[in-house]
Image (tube, rainbow, N blue to C red; front, side):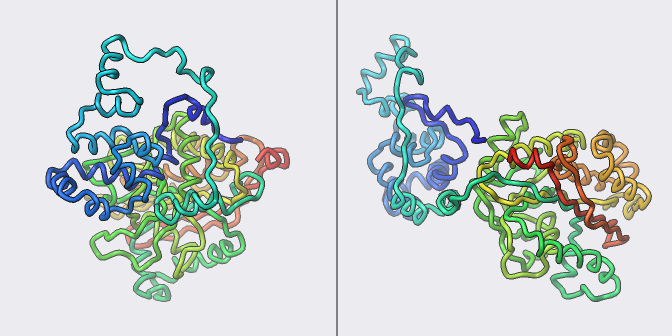
Length: 456
């Protein structure tokens, strides 16, 4: 079913949701630039020239020229960002707010001194708010002028089919950076590496036969997009594209990632309403944690055959989320995906691990027995396995083995967890070593019951 957005009916109010954020992304970033004195000076010296440096739509530029904050908000502006624009013009916050009411500055001040605007007459029941529909020409114009919103609008306009999204399967894999280097340097047939890549030959063929529309890819950033100035626990990529990061050796020669902003916005809305506090990111470079699994499953290609929603989990600085929390997130993710009202096929990938330690006197630690027991229980008893404490991961699987908690997000989204379906183990592979790491890989087909499938 559709997500609840009744807030759009509140009169005289624009809620800044994910769609508005995508629509006004560049407008709001333009406003942020005015926090620097040199940029304010350049803007005031030649407003049009400065605005032309930003990919703003004609409607957004005109709203700024007209000092029309209501129009700017309709075009995706948020008042806290637009306040930087107003401050550049020498306006106070009260002057800015008053300009949107149709009142003179003095009338607005008098109203506030008198106790502010009354709630009477300003509830949903008091005003009939018509639904605003855009014409095809208006949507096309917006797509042409606004690259951030283009993917959202195009996705909505292109698909008239009926039905909901379905989760077709889950992929679990290590994401060792040296695997990417071996691919990029043409070493896949060397004896050391051939055993690793042979374990994914079946997987590449399976992907061709079971190609999804979107991969929801769970990984961890390795001090690439996020340094110690910002340490979010869960990050959902809501942007239209994600380039490969330079991790110190130059970017991997792989295609850029195409996102799905409309689907990502839906997932964000659903997960946050289910009390999972996410950080939403519109611009982000992605490192080997994401690109290596893509290469392993799709090979060396000119363009990735799927869209990707990146989902970063902090497993670098403690405290990190527990396996139990990730498992519950996976359950909520299933609900989010299956409530999306487009019949797309989705795979969920959990990446990282298996046992490895990259630091200290224990560097090089591998625990084959523990890894394979983890794979056994991930298939047979994922909920019980999710309760394994952090200490066991660190002690038994190495300090970086904690990445395995991310696998529970993919596993928690499978239909057998809620008892309304089953899974099929399609492929399992384990190998030691790939550089410093034990490689683990698992593919599960998701097979919801007929009753569960009918609800989707």
